Length: 365
Image (cartoon, rainbow, N blue to C red; front, top):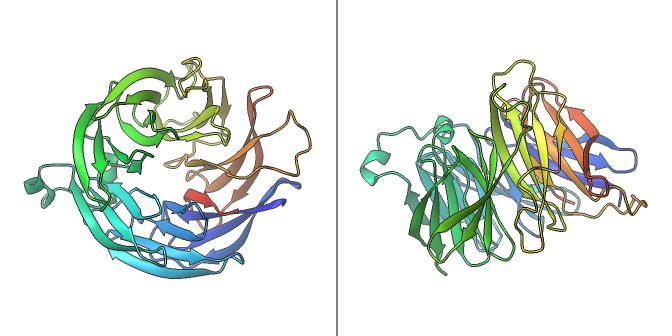
């Protein structure tokens, strides 16, 4: 199959956008639009790719879910209210996990796969402070961003303001029990990715542009490695904000994304790191960097496509595609990874119109 689709949210538009990537012609184009209910900056899908979950940076704070069929027909399932605007949402097939600012939430998924009843609400500040602190989209800039659960039902919430990673145990009924608050040795933990075997946690720091590797213990984290998500020659010369850490499909590499921040003349970056067979960084230095053609604005979202490119007949060619989002000029880029020569390169791009700024997306096929 040469045509693949990704659904994107927007930082500035309530509409969802279905893009089509043709891996033969190497083009990215708009397929259709889907009516939305807020500024859906983050969208994701379940493992079957037939349910969509989204957060919104618009008010009031809410989570949204849709079904999607093989013909890309979308049907809105549920909208649920939450206490503070969530940045990201994830799921494990039974529950949805979201976090933003001072709170995080666990919701049950109903029989249709939609986000439904609240199971647990987590206060990341003393409960008496929650009532008076900021709970709008601005709170994610100095609060929680993500909520990820590994195969051992250990959950991780990185918090920018507390400069810490909260670790929880998730019970069978979805309730969360705090195990530890782990201080980050580098400033501003934003995004996490647990290794598939549940032994390691990869963390990208927004404020300091480091990829941190932690060993996951029974109740706490142990920091063991650190690699720079930006080239050494720009560190300290410009201001950056890092966004995402994602694995390659084969689990042998990690990719990180960073955007420049109020630094004219500086562009965003994608970094590639090699992993050994146990999931640790082979070297703390990145294998290579891709410099984006723009700053990436307040985005720099990145997700690796889950499919094999059957149109690529060169065994030494591309093995992974990933999207890279930009709000500075409204671009969505497709970047390709070629491990045979450790290179990242631009494959395709699409520029949104009417001042629309894409933020995050999810691959549907």
